[in-house]
Length: 301
Image 1 (cartoon, helix red, strand yellow):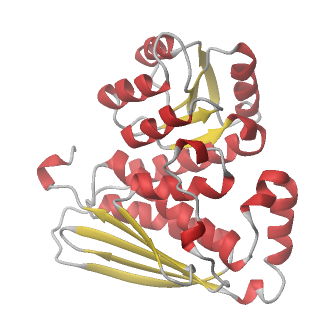
Image 2 (cartoon, helix red, strand yellow):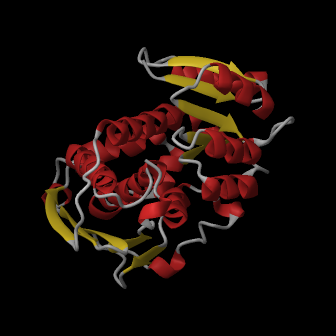
């Protein structure tokens, strides 16, 4: 049974996060009151995942991420962000955190994000590496616009990254998160044409609308096209949908801390933070993600 450590100096916020996670019978949840306490708890009992606040005494979230990644590089961390913590959160993502969820969205999104990160971690740990050398690896997929297929291809590509020794295992998990965000954007915002604004205003209606449109034309007739090319120096992932597209130039800068809490910027922030380059086509219905491969000697066993 996976164990999760929740770190927050606010008893109210900590209790909320713990209560939400305990709704799943699959998780064991324990608590820490700040970063210093968290490190002590981790040393006593290594969890499978850490969920942490950013603004805390005795080591803030950024300091906690840095120390955990130094001592426990395989341990994923999800950040809980609030107003005033945006800049620190962006730095923490750059230093190795796996994902984040705004505190105002904990009730609707925390359990979903935790499930996704833990599923990715288990998949990565559960697959042995492919030790053979290769000059080039290419594949492509044409997917019906179905959420289960989106999740399946996301898992497959994450597993392939570790099997093909694209980078270290923790970094492959982050690559998987970036690919998953690109796929989910194509599914929800591209083919189903559902705006992030609706998710911000009414989380339940957002998913109800997605469920309804997934069974209606023209949305249900659309496809997602995925391309992968991995060479000894670089991995390139492309994701294209059949939606009307959008103007990529109007996207807010997702690396600006002021935009961290905006629903339309979450996926882009994670893609740009975890990949080396992200490029949209002019129509805005295809995104290409680039990841430079680690040198062999830099990849821990």
